Image 1 (spheres, one colour):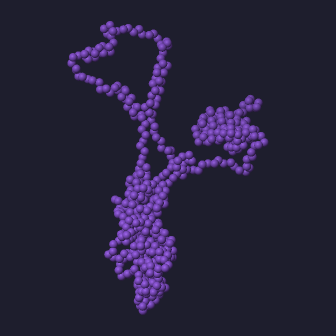
Image 2 (tube, one colour; image 1 turned 90 degrees about the vertical axis):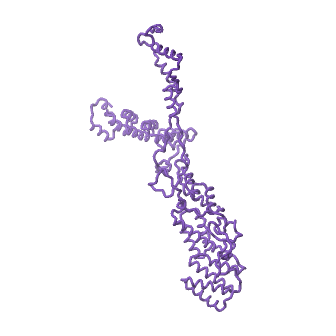
Image 3 (spheres, one colour; image 1 turned 45 degrees about the vertical axis):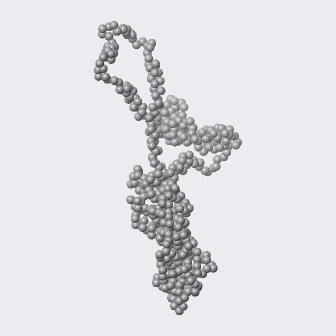
Length: 572
């Protein structure tokens, strides 16, 4: 210490030597430069000297380094002071969270938890104090493990600051304060007894010839008012003084007016579209059902319930920012690109695509070929139930959607009749009729061959060779690629030519064109009255009018409808 107090040693070499040899606390006493003293104080752990130097330097970087060192030593007071000087509110709030948590745990008697919290977060002075209070009950921390903070998950979407409203002061904000402050200021600065020189001796000038000019003017105005003639009759407009008018205008302009909330995206979708799918995506299921009823005559919406929910959920995304904040709902728009205008809302994005229906159609074909009629029927019905909620862009696609309805309707009707035939066990005539009607559905050629072969087999077993001959001839006309089908057809023709008779009379005349009733499964020959489904166009006998279509299970038979609307191009 004597060397330090009395020595004249100086220079960077001495300081560097002491610092290199591990004596920064000694080198600290030889230095006058505050920046060097600050670095040496941090290195030696002299937090008080570092605080004094940081106060003199007063730079953000030095305060930050001081806070780091103070946190390492567990000096929460200096950490708080350093964070306050750097305005590091994020770290400051976390510091308050930790220190207050330790205090809460300590106050409620959970000293072991308070000790662990203080130890993990570097509050060593608090931890030592709590260890003294715990005595032999100090909890042991796990060895070989590095404590880490439990950080909340990062938000899905980050952006700039949240938009802020510019709130102006109201007409009463500060009005009374200003009035009171003005009077107080006048009293404060009123020099009643102060010595500011001699006072003026004011004399009454009423009797003086050159008196107050204002008084003369006022007398003149009074004289003019008493004049017999009205003069120019310049009356007061009653607007008040100019300064009063300006003050009132300023007060009116300073009143905060809450901005009008914008229209919800769902409301925009509803107003701009007449498509049922867009209304369902907006969450307005009632208007969506009303549109489907008016356009397609749909009355049974039970099969569409889950699709309505999928449309609404699929056109929205939900973000959670904080656990205490409400979930933010975002509308997903159809056809959005980076070049899209932010002020123009597009239609909702829909989860059901026309391409998906094409894939389901091929899946239904495969199931039909494999003879899995129940699964195939479910697949085709799903297509019929999805089509009213599909949106396409072009007129060509609209025609393809309408064509798909006809294709799927034929398969649904045919599969329903085939499943019905397999349920019948004690009525051979009805089995033959249903098998025959199946061959008159508009099927793909491979499926038509299978239907003809099936009907031919059923009729041969029932000894209706004349009807079986007709099916065999039609099968050969399709040029079957499977040799077994052609061979079986030629055998039936050979047998039927020798005995062209039917043992059972059927309600079936292949020579007279007909369509099949979708409910009763009977032929409706040309010239007979019928009614149709406004959606799937299935035909029914007149007695089925007003009933639910058994093919699509959606629309009412014979209901008035404007037609399928599935594209914005149909509205333009």
